Amino acid sequence: MKNFLENNKDLGILALRLGVGCAFALIYGMMKIKMGPEMWTMIGQSMGNFGISFAPTFWGFMATMSEFGGGILLVLGLFVRPAAAFMAFTMIVATSTHLKMQDQWYNVIQPVEMLAVFICLIFLGAGKYSLDYLFFKKNKA
Image (cartoon, rainbow, N blue to C red):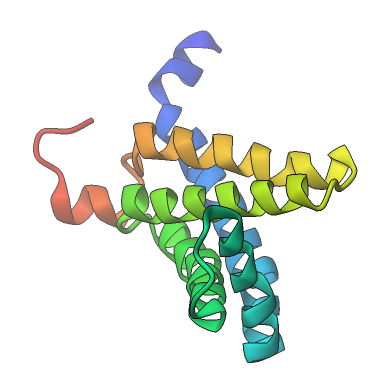
């Protein structure tokens, strides 16, 4: 069993990418796309936590695309590290917003958990079962 797990770490990365990618693309991102500019403006106002108060609709749209587009890229295993970096930044903003609003910890912990996942994906990359590996492999395992 140990050899199987050691020899198939890329299956674990694939499972992580598929689960998290589907959730972000189909649930979080799609929901925000459907809600439109009013929602994007609300989300974009969170950048005020970092002293950025201009163009809240733009920032909200970027967060929405980070979740939707990033989720799709995770599922495909394409540009996983950059997608995970954008998604990690989105989770930092989400965490700061929940903390500023003094939300209950169960509302704060979800973006913190996802931040940890995205940081792991930045370090791990897409794995063997990905378009990144297919297109860009250079003697990588």
